[in-house]
Image (cartoon, rainbow, N blue to C red; front, side, top):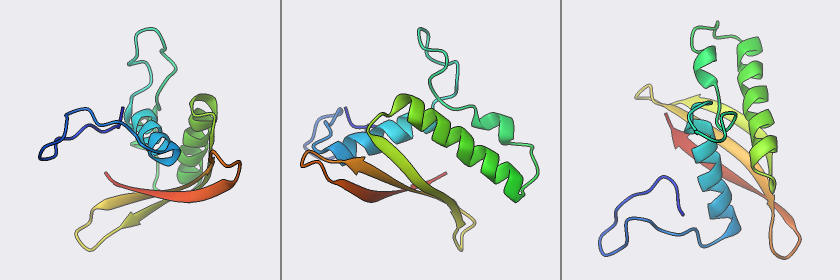
Length: 119
């Protein structure tokens, strides 16, 4: 099931992912935005990014955030390898998170893709 769910004209509420890449993108968004401990029978699923909220805005804190996300992705999304995570601020002070990841596709070739999410 595609995550996040959305309604388009004429489509169903729950769209399905049509490719492996779309599935991995849905899994990444779902994993990163789920607080750790929220799943009843899987309390370690998700991230605990709230713990970094009041840390200093420096390279050490950012490295800790990236390491935390990479650890969780390696634990829960088996066919995905994170290559880079970058935070970009636009002219309206929106924060865009750019995640570069690679996936082994059905033909056996590992390809890199990008996911950009506004937070």
